[in-house]
Amino acid sequence: MQLHYGLNDLKDLDFMAFLPVILPVIAVGALLVLIALIDLYRNRKIRENVLIWALIILFVNTLGPILYFVIGRKDGEKS
Image: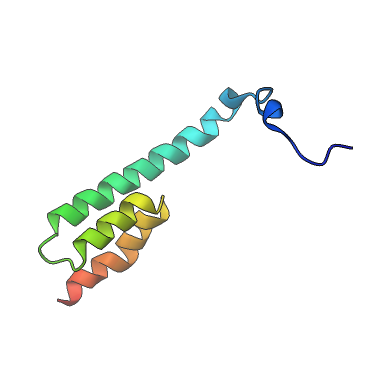
Protein backbone atom coordinates (compact mmCIF):
# COMPACT_ATOMS: atom_id res chain seq x y z
CA MET A 1 0.00 0.00 0.00
CA GLN A 2 1.40 3.39 -1.03
CA LEU A 3 0.99 6.02 1.68
CA HIS A 4 2.27 9.10 -0.14
CA TYR A 5 2.69 10.46 -3.62
CA GLY A 6 6.07 11.33 -5.06
CA LEU A 7 7.08 13.92 -7.61
CA ASN A 8 6.88 11.29 -10.34
CA ASP A 9 3.13 11.06 -9.76
CA LEU A 10 2.73 14.77 -10.61
CA LYS A 11 3.79 14.20 -14.21
CA ASP A 12 0.71 12.02 -14.73
CA LEU A 13 -1.63 14.77 -13.46
CA ASP A 14 -3.50 16.76 -16.12
CA PHE A 15 -3.08 20.40 -15.07
CA MET A 16 -5.13 21.67 -18.01
CA ALA A 17 -8.20 20.08 -16.44
CA PHE A 18 -7.80 22.37 -13.41
CA LEU A 19 -7.27 25.54 -15.48
CA PRO A 20 -10.98 26.54 -15.69
CA VAL A 21 -11.11 26.45 -11.89
CA ILE A 22 -7.76 28.08 -11.12
CA LEU A 23 -7.81 30.89 -13.70
CA PRO A 24 -10.89 32.76 -12.35
CA VAL A 25 -9.51 32.57 -8.81
CA ILE A 26 -6.21 34.08 -9.96
CA ALA A 27 -8.03 36.76 -11.98
CA VAL A 28 -10.25 37.79 -9.06
CA GLY A 29 -7.24 37.93 -6.72
CA ALA A 30 -5.26 40.08 -9.16
CA LEU A 31 -8.25 42.38 -9.68
CA LEU A 32 -8.71 42.82 -5.93
CA VAL A 33 -5.02 43.70 -5.52
CA LEU A 34 -5.17 46.20 -8.38
CA ILE A 35 -8.33 47.93 -7.11
CA ALA A 36 -6.98 48.10 -3.54
CA LEU A 37 -3.67 49.60 -4.68
CA ILE A 38 -5.45 52.18 -6.85
CA ASP A 39 -7.71 53.17 -3.93
CA LEU A 40 -4.73 53.37 -1.58
CA TYR A 41 -2.83 55.58 -4.05
CA ARG A 42 -5.76 57.92 -4.60
CA ASN A 43 -6.32 58.37 -0.86
CA ARG A 44 -2.69 58.27 0.29
CA LYS A 45 -2.90 61.71 1.91
CA ILE A 46 -5.69 60.73 4.32
CA ARG A 47 -4.66 57.11 4.97
CA GLU A 48 -2.45 56.13 7.85
CA ASN A 49 0.39 53.61 7.34
CA VAL A 50 0.32 53.66 3.53
CA LEU A 51 3.52 51.62 3.18
CA ILE A 52 2.32 48.94 5.58
CA TRP A 53 -1.03 48.66 3.79
CA ALA A 54 0.71 48.42 0.41
CA LEU A 55 2.85 45.55 1.69
CA ILE A 56 -0.17 43.78 3.17
CA ILE A 57 -2.12 44.18 -0.07
CA LEU A 58 0.76 42.82 -2.15
CA PHE A 59 2.02 39.98 0.00
CA VAL A 60 -1.07 38.60 1.76
CA ASN A 61 -2.75 37.01 -1.23
CA THR A 62 -6.45 37.75 -1.70
CA LEU A 63 -6.93 38.32 2.03
CA GLY A 64 -4.74 41.48 2.00
CA PRO A 65 -7.02 43.54 -0.26
CA ILE A 66 -10.09 42.35 1.63
CA LEU A 67 -8.50 43.42 4.93
CA TYR A 68 -7.64 46.79 3.41
CA PHE A 69 -11.22 47.42 2.29
CA VAL A 70 -12.66 46.30 5.64
CA ILE A 71 -10.11 47.82 8.06
CA GLY A 72 -7.81 50.16 6.14
CA ARG A 73 -10.43 52.40 4.62
CA LYS A 74 -11.95 53.06 8.05
CA ASP A 75 -8.49 54.12 9.28
CA GLY A 76 -8.47 57.22 7.10
CA GLU A 77 -12.06 58.20 7.78
CA LYS A 78 -11.40 58.67 11.51
CA SER A 79 -8.85 61.43 10.86
